[in-house]
Amino acid sequence: MALETSCDETAAAVVRGLGEVLASEIASQIELHRPYGGVVPEVASRNHTLNLRTVLETTLTRSGISLRQIQIFAATSGPGLNSSLLIGNTVAKALALASNRPFYAINHLEGHLLSPFQTDQFDGNIPPFLGLIVSGGHTMLVKVNGFGVYQLLGATRDDAAGEAFDKGAKMLGLPYPGGPEIERNARGGDPAAFSFPRGLIQDGTLDFSFSGLKTALLYQTRRMSDGEVFKRLPDLCASYQAAIVDSLVAKTEAACAQTDLKVVALSGGVSCNLAVQQGLRRMAHRIGLELRVSPNALATDNAAMIGFVASLRWRNGLVPSPLSEEVDPNLPLLIP
Ligand code: KG4
Ligand code: ZN
Image (cartoon, rainbow, N blue to C red; front, side, top):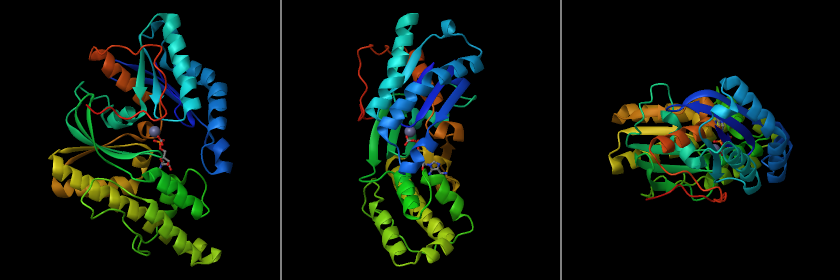
């Protein structure tokens, strides 16, 4: 059983064997945070406390497994909001202690990273691959040499891709979370209507930058009346989205060229975006790569991906985490 409460989703899952998902429940707090235009940490942790018991009980009922049958417990221990991480982490530790079962503290980013492999066909082997994690808090390229062997190749120097979507949407008067809103409004828009910058695209590194793009959108909207912004919303959204897609595609292609990896795995909330998927798919097809995309249910925050990593750790004979291990809001993805 895995719990995930790193941000604003209260999530629990029961997985079996090599990551087969028996039940995965998510209580979203999006509506509560929407009036603030982003996640308010105190509101998030308070609602995890209120929701977790129900989410846990529903997950167990739907899984058909009783608490006594659970063999290992796991929870996200970082990165994320401290007071939110504490809730799921403490509850999972308490359940492990009371049932005399092992507890695994799992890195949220490792959950995202491996989620494209969590399918019914998974054979237990994580092949070498290039991971592109694109979420609200992170944008990174990771070279994976096998389970637990990770090397960070590049990351955003300012905003994450999801954050760029969220902040761009806010400027355009669209609600939080902005990613799905921009994607929806971009339909029928012309991606070449506005020329927005592709940050760091020629700088030779594998890093990303989205702050210049955000500023460019701000200046563009300042030059327009509210009526014009409304009228040109599809073009603005399509052009803004295209700039994000181009940056992601260019750096992923460069990382593949540098590493000679043949498999790219896309994960995190932004991987739900069809323009992002299409941009990467075209590039993968052009240069002969295999692209794996995490299924939508595993792309945005969920506990099944945490359970998957925990079951891999257990099956690989890795020692459980001590109950004294603390949560870490800035937990890095381990680099050997
Ligand atoms: O992985 P996630 O659920 O949470 C974090 O770990 O951050 O990602 C949430 C982010 C938000 O910024 C949201 O706007 C973005 O994923 N997102 C999208 C889409 N769906 C969610 N961005 C672009 N297009 C989407 N369809
Ligand atoms: Zn996440």
